Length: 147
Image 1 (tube, helix red, strand yellow):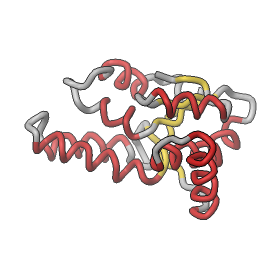
Image 2: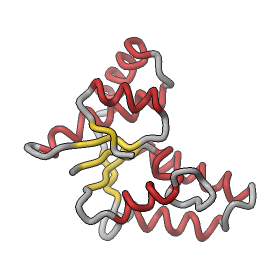
Image 3: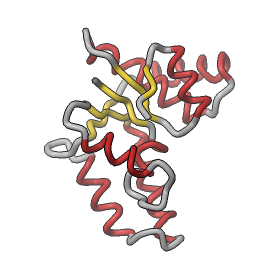
Image 4: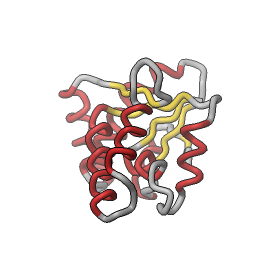
């Protein structure tokens, strides 16, 4: 299965005190899952990990080293996808207007909807998030819940 992971799902994989940490970690470690995310996730997760380190929830350099290793294009378990910026923004705006969810949550669904179905061909695909409104909206775009 191909799973698009939003930054909220990925960030918790690095923070042991975060609710759902074990599930997020299992998703990262599952060899049967192709884990993908959008380009902005690199920034969002790095920011979340730096904030967590400032709150003494982990060591900054250790958390960031794990994150950057996991998104390394040559060896990491998370593949960072990009789509045409104008297409993503146009789709995200439509999602915000139609579903009333937060802008970045809509951006992730738009990026996923524009990239993942093409990759999946005959395979199921899912969306991993910790936000119920985002998960419900992703389901409207044929994504199965993945967390």
